[in-house]
Length: 176
Image (cartoon, rainbow, N blue to C red; front, top):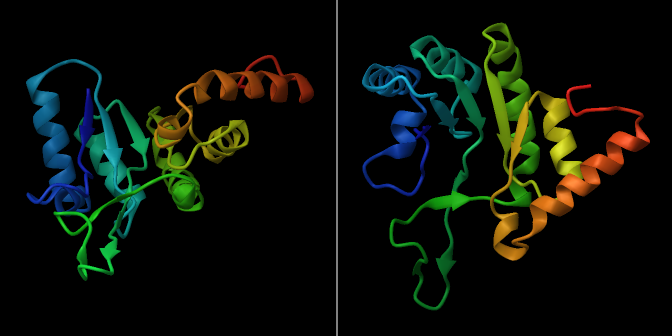
């Protein structure tokens, strides 16, 4: 079960509680108390100390971390002079956020490894090079999102390129 504590698109404060380690831990703890299924907590990049938030979520019972969700952003229609999104803010995703997403994975990797928690790195993955960067930054798996909107069959292509990379590097598996 993915616990999305970081959605910037909800008026009820998804970003607000996802950026507060106490509130994040309370949400994870409540989900943990309600079931025994694996929990994956999606972290927000819009916070001061993502590693501390990750630690608190781990202590509260998450089984894995998805790093990161979208960045808060907005767009304005210059003709109407009003925000394009009805909620004013929304999530910025895609290749533009990859450098920040990589850094956030890198920041979380040590605390996650210390607790045996895996990270799914995500944010701007459009090809195998992007995926490899996330793996090298500390992710155990890679999520693809926005790229699927403009190339629905991108995942088999990424997998093919990953296999080619492994062959070039004389590696038998991604874990190597």
